[in-house]
Image (cartoon, rainbow, N blue to C red; front, side, top):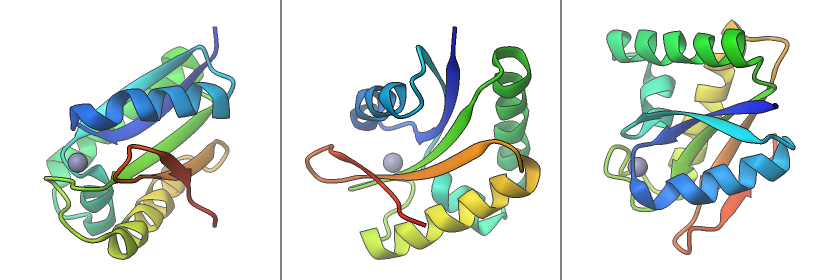
Length: 125
Ligand SMILES: [Zn+2]
């Protein structure tokens, strides 16, 4: 069994697109989902300490228990938790990737943008 992990929005519209993309991207059978409302903004701002702690605790379970081989952070169109436009959200997602990378140096971390047609785009670094 191979796992990867997604830090995704709780928005129902982006669950399946993210999971399907990541199963292929990491050749993973299962995608552990950590969901918040606008998680790219939460991790970029580093203001909501309890939420961040909760995200990191769940990430640790996914990595320790499931040997997750990759982490994805998602931003998406029409997000209730992060109403910023795409350009600004991409900055948030990159900041969030940097933050997670401080905790996990040896695991691949990617960023995703899910557009108005619910198509998944991987951020180029
Ligand atoms: Zn959202």
